[in-house]
Length: 193
Image (cartoon, rainbow, N blue to C red):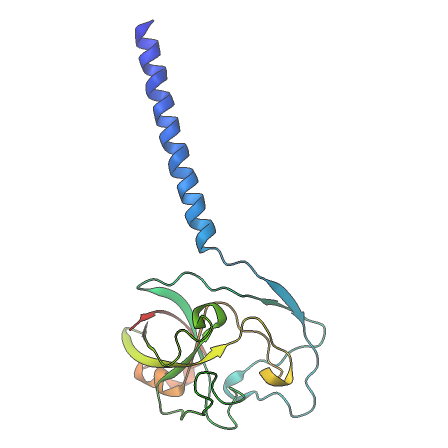
């Protein structure tokens, strides 16, 4: 009889241990989760109003686009999608950069970050390190890749950014050694420099 009680006690302790681990894992996953905060219905851009340089998308009338106020948690190697953007006047980035109200040359390593990572301008003019294609490069944060709004004149009639975007100048792509024919989208990792 004593042996059965010891076995039940050991089993109870083991079940309790796994329950605690499961709850902790779920809480961690929920903390890292970044669910959509809403949706925007696309409108047809007025003629000549959406710059498709660098294969930028234009909003499609009636299509629903997810919006995000958050981005995945930042770590020493945060996973992201690198996209191509021109921060020059007349480029597909639209207006001047959010951080300094200026345009930036395609030959300067600069980036825009999704809304959650941009963090209400807290990363403005800070550098991040981008790792991709077996190389790394430092780039300055100069703009927000807006994940909360889009499909309007302020956003050049482009859809909202996804919540995991590092939108980079041509200089960043060159520094990573990516052949120009493959510029557009690439899986990368980044961290604050």
